[in-house]
Length: 255
Image (cartoon, one colour):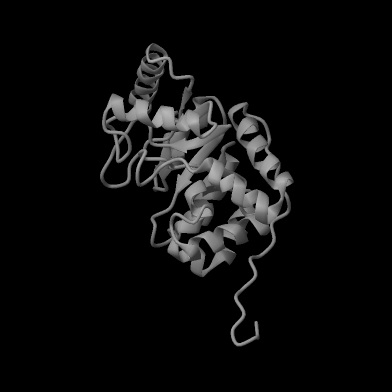
């Protein structure tokens, strides 16, 4: 299995704080069935700042360390990039890390409480520039959960989305879990990834998530999601079905 979102690089954001933490996470990942993982430290979110050169160097060092420890996990470089005004120019100047550093897939993070007003235009401009933006953990964004039609429009216009495994598994509560399943039903989620930060409070949960997906959506959905991660790191086009609007809740039996 391939995990396309993690905070496994040591000491550079709110994920692993040491090489030992990274090794513990790597062992947990392997135990959860993961053989390849993309390290996606925060680029900038007001607290952390990680540039491309540092991420590539940290990834190389971690792979060497895991080899020395005989841990069978391959770490690829990536970045979790909070949407910001100069994102397009930094992309063109190759200052950002695309996923696996060899594809045109790019993580885009929104603030947890809202969606920036310029998001629609920026997502469009990113695609015009030749990149494929992937909106990370939309199920945990309060504005998107309140107005899922916004996500539908982003996806309809070409963006992709990645839902967190722990959300599917119910680790963030029932409401987020239910909304995550609605996104899958509406073809508004194209990847499942761990967004793992540690081995305790923010672990991998990939096997648990896929068990839930198998039960509620069938094995075929799981196969498509697993294959999409493989297609992504190969830089190929992923499987995507026509998105549909998320059904609104019934109130007193009425829509």
